[in-house]
Length: 392
Image 1 (cartoon, rainbow, N blue to C red):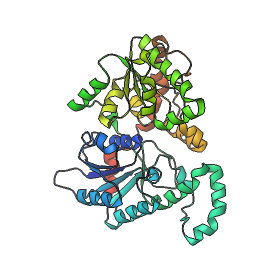
Image 2: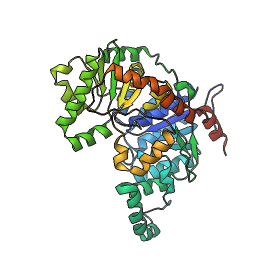
Image 3: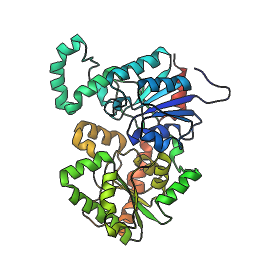
Image 4: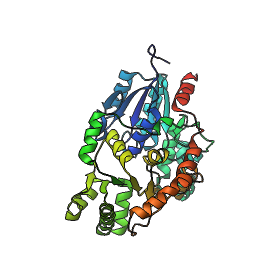
């Protein structure tokens, strides 16, 4: 392990295209005294290069990524998440394999995050490209697709490459087929961004007035307009924003650009605040400043911030994971929300302050405290990193 005098270890995060992985990376380092660096593709680099601690690198291919790693010479490389790289076209399977072997060859400790809560560790560590894998792969594939769906082959190939890396989690995945390293960062509680630039950007997006925040990710927006029709969903969402304004609050929507473009044309919504692209700091400032936050996905990464800061949070739907893989959804509900009760709202019901304030009062006992009790016993990031780097 190489450390500068009187300096903490250096962590370098290689980020995929999902905002949740950037959030998880920042949750891991927040207030922990680590030196950090980040490697990203566009558009994440342009959105975040000025707001993240440490150096930020934009890379176009594997060669560029390896050059950034060599320049930083980190103590720990965090693949957030290696399981998503090929799907998000960060690197392909062969390049992911080369990356892991390169880091191992240079003696750099490496971990990956795992959005699937260890379930993929139950799959056989089989190289489907090898002659043996091709022989035995067909019956395994047929069985696996029945359980894991059409992405089974993708899961198996990624599992084979990442199987020997420690896996980090923000909750305990309760899986034994991997080296699982869950952690809890107490610094997220009462987190406040102190960046002047962030405050200015936030003020430009959300004027100083009590506001309700609606957070809609692309993975939940596009399936819903495909299922229900764009006009129907946009009308339903417009009604929610109007409800907020009728209650004397500014309505703020963070959503994909096509959604915002459709709603911004409505003259009744001209007083709404619309945000389609923003960096981590701005997003966090908007998120923490909202009186109420509404989601369409119970596993949106930023929900963690709301829950651990005991800020009222509501859900219109469980999210896309329930449609894509019921096994992963059930595992997520079990491990994330152990005994906690989420507050679901019917999309067609009118939002009123009287209704929401009543629900909000119940969330302390039903949601915040049970969720906190489920994670507070986990090791801190400092403990996790210290133990990792001490291993030979």
